[in-house]
Length: 306
Ligand code: SIN
Image (cartoon, rainbow, N blue to C red):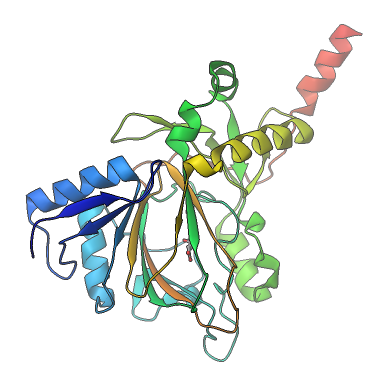
């Protein structure tokens, strides 16, 4: 193929990459150029990849990290024969509503409900409704860097409890799939602020699948999270992708969150194939019985004042 070109699609994030043959192994310098563009733009769009096979998608993704084998997901949601691919579909699967038919409907960072959130993901659009079915991404590095130093200091050492039960619409899914999701993914605590292993920049790890913040009361945690989430999804920090068939999006999950919009006619098929790259580090710890509010400390503090 020709020269690789990178055209920014948004000021905060998003860029279109042309000149890449995703079916063949990348030359070392091309891999380096794509990785550099990924770090800079956080979300890369590779259009026109309708013909990519599952094997080729997996092989391409594998050039940017270890593939997640999806131990966190019920097997019925994976591609038959290719467990590295999560199938996000609103088509029926084996005569039943699919376990992923309404996936991604609240702001999240992939697999933040596991101890090792994904490094990144590659999502291929296989079928799409005539209009809508868009995905929005927020740049969480910019969101962190534009907080005032006082709020940055406040959140520096705080941990948030991420919970797969808070996936929006999970209750509409097959109860067996939901039970399996919960069993596989007990609540897990992660720092609110993390350091990107390649850029060294700090980013928020937030979203709408967080039950609370350790050491804060439920009310304090909710207020702080609302503030951070509202700040991070300001239009200035967001890129909205309007899909074309055959688009592959590759996002850096270490500094972004996203949401899949339900802005389409649900009787129309929307089918996406996602490979996730395993996170480089374990940043979470499982909390079997999370008690969010540190009420002991609160009670002692009040007693001391009285
Ligand atoms: C996801 O959350 O990974 C799904 C995104 C999408 O279907 O647009």
